[in-house]
Image 1 (cartoon, rainbow, N blue to C red):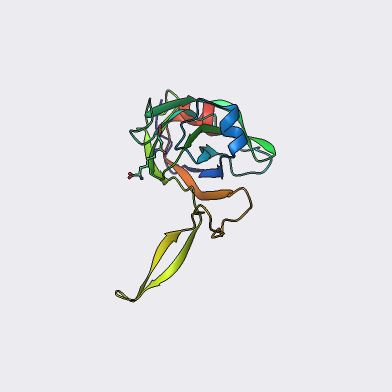
Image 2 (tube, rainbow, N blue to C red; image 1 turned 90 degrees about the horizontal axis):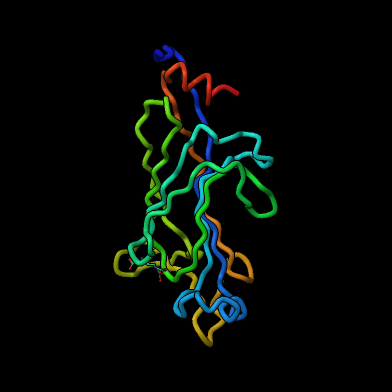
Length: 189
Ligand code: SLL
């Protein structure tokens, strides 16, 4: 089992989260949702092709480290061939939760046995709100302000009526001179 010289494989992925505001009805129907929670959100790594024809099976598991206010804070997701995203199923790894606050999620991607690669560490800032820019007269710079709907006010500039927010990034996992066994088993199309 040797490293393959001069071979470099790139695997595209999407890292993202979406979020919608919890409705009163949803909270009534789910008494387990804590009162202070305002949003339902999902964080995921998924295949970037709409039909999901780029498989992610070279990933063995992914751990998502949530804010310490979540129990348990570390969620381990094994490879499963499909997750539901919008109206379709695509290969991916997904955690769904409810909450009230934004925080940075630590993501560790572990590859299948035989890769002899260390895990890959990424971070994703969980977004629940849209943001707008407002001029700060003291610094002369623009500050980011969340568009939060305040009680009794109509201030909402969220993309959609239910406050749907999507925060997606494209990235590529690069295998430089992968091991031959890992390459033939998991990286070849
Ligand atoms: C902060 N960014 O730095 C915030 C933390 C924490 C989010 C946000 C609920 C957790 C739960 C939740 O949304 N936590 O009730 O299980 O202070």
